[in-house]
Length: 248
Ligand code: ADP
Image (cartoon, protein in one colour):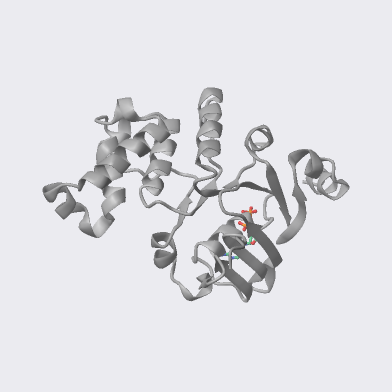
């Protein structure tokens, strides 16, 4: 079979909390290498959707597949993270007392092997990968700086870099430009755009100008299902979408 279907299949997924449907027959298909933005008013189900994809929440109904073979509902959150789906939460969780380089080293080795890695060192391939990632996230000049001394934007990029050390097939990024300066926002747009192609990137974001600047394809969630999908121009002119946002 030479056909390449989506890398991520979310099909008819429902999640209830005390009878309230946070996700209600959600269908989402993400292609290999695409950059997809997910928008929607507060309470639309965006966080719950990310929790389902990353295995933090198991749905009451539906299926979630990684490629055509791997049933994500059978895997733990940890297995999914190790298996190629990286998630960046809104707040950066870098190790402030460690340098940029050490943070990337830690991300390569995983927590358990961190101390042995520090004493034995990384292999050549891992060191090359760190250099490549530092270049990608634009922190080559800050490599020896403590992560605690980085700007808010740089911390966010470092955390994306830490995820990249695991060579994820899919990256989920939650509100990447919240709290960023205009210049940091622009650099983040460039970074995420440059990651697409090599990775599938799913961005949940409220900043519409930012979404417009990066996304080719936008999915609008509302009440736990897809309200509209398409280019930003298409979804912004959709009467259903206008109604939902005016009512917010
Ligand atoms: P979004 O990220 O789009 O703002 P969420 O996925 O966080 O939306 O939430 C969707 C709905 O589900 C909201 O109404 C929220 O209150 C509810 N919800 C989310 N998580 C829980 C939970 N753990 N317990 C009860 N209700 C929840």
